[in-house]
Image (cartoon, rainbow, N blue to C red):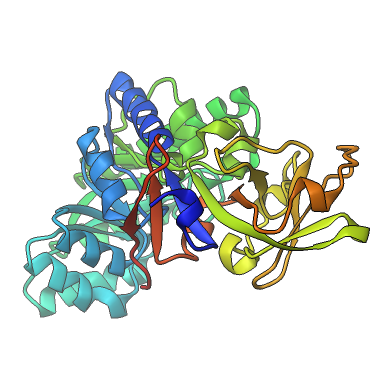
Length: 378
């Protein structure tokens, strides 16, 4: 199917860009001498993950047990569930383990660790558990020097639960925009996670895996001594937030939303599209960055960005395309964007925009597309 035959709105993946992004990240990890475990929450698509594994990825990272179940059913065995486990979800995790899935759980508190130990004893089983480390104050985890780190490690270890490693995510990297700042945070992330592993080992608790990662820090890292693997997710598609951070160009962004011009408000300088926030998502991550892209950057059907224009507003099913204040554009909006014209809109956040669609249309260089299904739910 060609682009002009696809009903809108639709999520498009540029296959050539995606493959280039995969090769770039995998090549960098190979140079640094570490394994790479992609975070598949960005696409939740087996076709994309197969391309990542074919390039050299070892295992995957998931953010929901639904993802773990779906990818395991598709043949992926080595899976890290990188969200602190809720005790109520342990039966689902056990079901996956008993089917042969090498599922690794994550905890960052003594209560959850004790629940895993008790559940393991009750069901005569053992999980592999990694401890989440907070290296930048961004979200969850235990800081490397906290006593809680050893407390959690001992609860697991002394009750026969395998401590498989430590993991961290420097999510604050999304707030940076210079190479020096990103490199410094990448080193902070590495050093903090390695230190946590050292403390556990000094306490007599084996800790073989040291896992770090965010797309910006993964690409900015220059040495990863003591690290065994890196995780990153959005790199496979990139988005406007990553562009503002400085780790990709506009023509590296592999995800876009295909939309059609359905009307005008000529006196306001608006073209109305059939892609509102239900298609683009409500994520306005670029509003806090140096360049605000509104709800997305419009491009021609061939992917060429249209400078001076943005999706400035969105209702549920209506997107508003207009000139930016700084552009000085004085084109007749009705002539520049006639009704029926199709455009591609680059998103602020690839994960959030992808989540609005049950499938992607994967577009080859010749313009032909095939449908790739996407997993939904929890």
